[in-house]
Structures are given as C-alpha cells and as structure tokens.
Image (cartoon, rainbow, N blue to C red):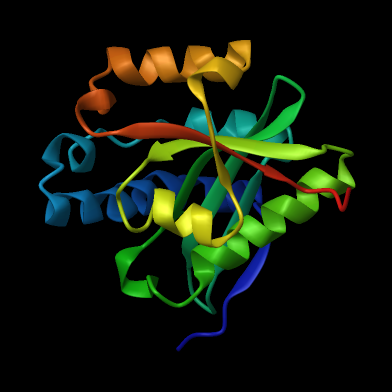
Length: 173
C-alpha cells in the first residue's frame, strides 16, 4: 500500500483531477449504471474555481494524485460537491481520509454541518457516508440550495437510481 498524503490542492494538481473523476466514475459500470460511468470529464475550470476558494483537497502518493474532494458553501453549510478516488487505490481508506479532512476544513471555517447528495444504495456512496455518521435529509428538510441541487440531478437523469441528500454535524453539541 502506498503512503498517501491528503493536502490542499496546488495549481499544478488541477489538470489531473478530471481524469481522477472519470476513473472513479468508471466503477458505476460494474453496477449497470453506465450513464453515470459515461458522464464526460468536468472541465479543469470547474476545479480551478473551487481551488481559488480553497475548496479542493487531494490525496497523493509519491508519484501522483489518486483522489480528491471538491467542496463549496451552500446554504450556510459546507457542501461536498464531489469525492473521487481512482479504483487502483480504492478500499484503502483514502475516501474516508479525504472526508475527515473535509470535516476539519468545515470546522476550521466555522461551519456546523456538512451536506451532500449521493446514490442511496451504491456501496461506495450512501452506505459509505452512513458508516461515517452521515444522516439522510428528508425532502421536507431540504434547504433551498440543496433542493436546487436535487432538481438539477433529476433533470440530468440521475434519479433513475435512488438518490438522497445527507448531512453531518461537525460540532460536538
């Protein structure tokens, strides 16, 4: 197992992140979710904007970036836009380490909670987040921004598989 360092992204990391996202997304093919696996790579500019806000963390081995988490502020919470780990480094706790680092970012910025949307039943989605203490947010409790995210996901066809919004408190109270 490679030694993995999680750190804020540097400008020189950004070019690799779309490839990491596509590689991570390829796992959906094994679940007959080809439409998700076939989504095009995001533009580097997507990562650049997040990087300029300080909202990208990467996991790197000695020779390359193998994972990332991209964040943004949404409705007064820190929103996990995307988490990705290349399949060759899956199952090593890298996604968990990235998420714990994101929680540290949230706390350091004074957020009380984090939010995300995900596939409810995909093992490396809903069940993974639940194992880290995340809870499902009911439709009635969606904040306006999170409701917008869900509407966009539905409009792009992601709701052909069950999706949920989730939240996690990052404070001790």
